[in-house]
Length: 446
Image (tube, rainbow, N blue to C red):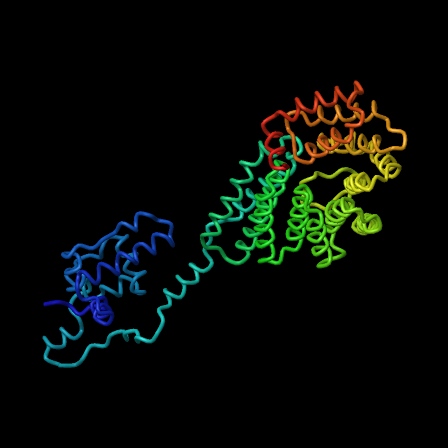
């Protein structure tokens, strides 16, 4: 005759009195426990019809195997010693009373009320809510990977580092599809935003402006979701940078101006003003606005005590003073302020020449070369010599900014096309721009 165990009573309450109904619940509980305890063996546990009949009928001399006990405890919220108590402790008090003829009912532990929550379920749910698929070591790895990309960028360039940046972004996105507590999820959003931002910057340097805009939009949306103003403003600066090289100068200025308006005293506004506003305004010919933007950027540099030297072009840190002045030089070239270009370039010459950035040295040379052609008495030989140096410095790692300025220098030298120095520069420019990467930039700029 079946024994009335706590297991039997709980299964009756939950309408799990057939093998099919019980086995379905048991296998779901085993799968959940396997995930919680990180023990994949449990997910394959099943109950045969014979096992179910023995458990339900209380026909046990010993407890089930340990793994089965773990699943039963997770499923029913009671220790197995209670679930099978009458199955191995001997006859129930009720059976003994009937045999002795007393007719007294046995005293047993009260059954749980149907409207009560199971304490084990509460604890399990708490563990689920605070579980994470991204521990601190993983977050630190992603962060250091992004820092490494930024620190090596001006040496290795976008073509070498773009695959690694894509991997970081993909891993961050994959982790975000899982479960994390708020602190971890916020950090993953920040890392994903910065990976997208770096890829957006790289896309500008390779001449893919539509791709850059998409990456920058992603970086802005992710950073705004967590209130990360620093990354948000940096992404706005990169979007303005992209719009500038796409020839959309009014939009580049508007993008940077809107970002500055949100946080006028933020350190990221130095870049937004010098690289975003001043250069775009120079292209539109607004001299007064250019001077205002450069002046505001230099005042902010003093307020935040930024480095004097030439900071990395792709860094998330605030612009250094030398990089701000290098952007001012470019702005004055567009306005044909020749004397100002030469003064500013001389002021930062030592810092630029001792930097590790061959691109920056190349770009400053191209700006100065253009200014030398704009003088009342053009210095064609010196300008073309600087142009050739710029191409050699960039070598086999062309970027869109160097391509555009070296092309512009070639076009501005057209009035002296019969000059030997101009012919030499033209030959070197055609050879340099025949590289596949430069040809791709030429097609995107046309």
